[in-house]
Length: 391
Image (cartoon, rainbow, N blue to C red; front, side, top):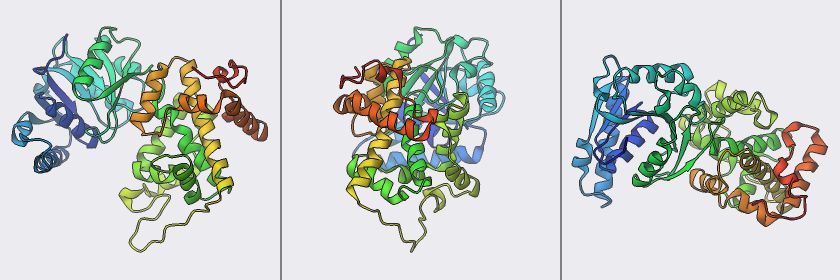
């Protein structure tokens, strides 16, 4: 199997991610079949794509909006799935529920060609488990795009243990042709980004729940002192707690309840209340008209303490992922800078700090709390705490 511009791309799920992936494939010159079980959602996706293409044309970024739109066909996801019969690659982008994904892949396998590749855009579920429902699991893999797919460069390429090894370089090459930056991730919970980024949210909430600082101060510390584009509370509200909390909970469960990934009651209560962030007008912050946003306590000593505590936890996650061969050092750095726009790679940050400073901060937290949450990666320990570089 070789992908070419003549390869027809199928996308199952016409939400924001599925629509974005369809747009990327169509812009790259492919015919695309976009499908959804909800015909109203499919109609909305069609209208959104038309509006987006016209807007891009008006801005001079493309000059063939109509031609691109004509490459995309729309079909309800219901038996028989005749629209996918000629596809060479089908990407699933439906709700993050394993039973739903199993149903999609089972249905797809009954109609696609023998050499059609089936990929999941899941952000945290096991690709191996998704592949297990198929009679030909060797053609199943993960292709995890980031939202919004047309703008975000990163794609995590995740082979399951059953995936044919020759598919990985083919997928990497195709993503490159689509203008993406692909990285290879081991099929472990959260892959690269959604695993390593968990302390950015979780440790920030822990600091808030302990009363060390309020949300605005923590956000200020991470943006003004740390250089991150958004603070953790602002970012969680932007992502939506229906997404961010569920990913945290999924990763926590998938890691056999490792305390490093433990969710918080503060975020769970927002999720339960339907206060999902910007999309609902209320999350950690209140976005209603006339609402007064809290002001940060811009104490440099406090802000530095907050930033360094969260950064030490992030570095520890990156070190552990490298030690356990989740990805190469280069792919780990690329994933965090391209996938979540960190100001620099976490391994680079560790090298600047020195492993001794990272260990000092982690061990101080561990001795203070006596929680396994703060255990230092063995990779940091192997550097003998001698101010050595991690890689």
